[in-house]
Image (cartoon, rainbow, N blue to C red; front, top):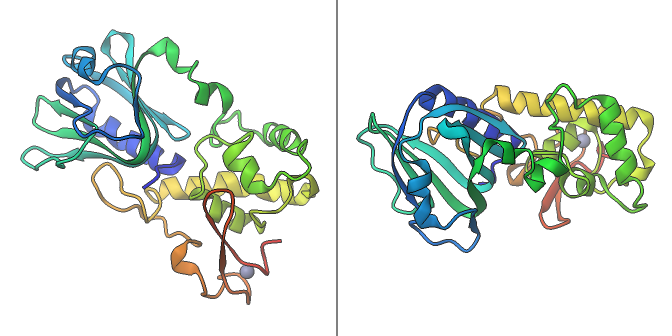
Length: 277
Ligand SMILES: [Zn+2]
């Protein structure tokens, strides 16, 4: 339900393949009121801002999706706890939605916010000034996300003597696009516990975490997103999560441990008490 970096990357690619060059012909915004849906303009002005414009390109950055439009505008979906789905011509759109765009050939793009999320129309130049993008300057799969850059994040996080790995990755300073979902397998593959204090990471553990961050996210994207989230066409991703509610009480795939769960920092964490130190 919460789209993190891999799902946004997959949905952006699918949107580009399906909608680049297509013109927005209809727009309904704010149809279903939602307390945690955030818009940067009054909802009734979105049709004027969007109808008639063509989608030129679509890309993602962390858990933000950016569709570049004509007239130097961009449509940006950020931090979406919900779905972004394309309905082919003739298929009925969902009854509840926060944004519904129609295209000349008859397909409909729906943004359905379940938990939270933002829908914004911006000038291209404003995107790089979004607080989220300013704060998490470099996303983990970009070339600039080097081991040296990662070590600087670790050093910053280690200023708080009690800062844990979960806190460093999802809160402060945070890594773009990582939430409580992707976090689980990233830490499992690194052999590190979510509560592990950042300050006590050894050089080897730091390297293992960096490698796992990049490799795990890459695998999640290559497999079409995680298996508990849907893609642009409403299909579940092909990445089989190692840890999640399904794994509690089962054997660890790597050792003799039994997977446990705990409530920690506003979300459930899953871990092997034996091999995640
Ligand atoms: Zn284990």
